[in-house]
Image (cartoon, rainbow, N blue to C red):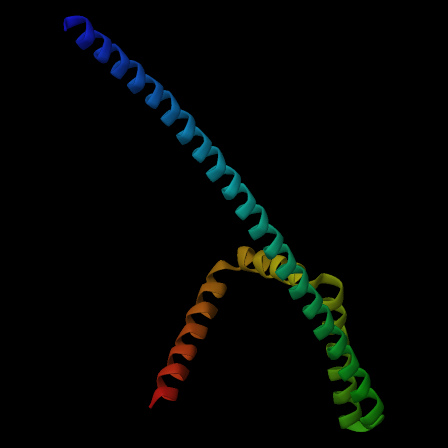
Length: 145
């Protein structure tokens, strides 16, 4: 009877060790699959962000083309002489420059220029931010009433 008990105890120990090793393999496989899923999700998120960024740049370029077209329309329809002619020419020039900038630089160039401007002028930038926040808060609270 002692041998049967020792034999059963030995088999139980072997079974426990085998289950432990198999459990480690299952856990390791699960960890690897989770890592693969995480890497795939990160890659897909990166691809989606690139796609959205490209579409935003395309839209910015289209807006730039529209602004340049508006400048051309102003030039064609505004008077050539006098104060109105000078003013309309200045507006058309400014619109054309802005449209060209948007077409050439895109959204990424615009954000880089904005970042550089904020770095060069931090205090006015903070004040402008506070002012815009105040105006937005006033607008949003007044629109609820």
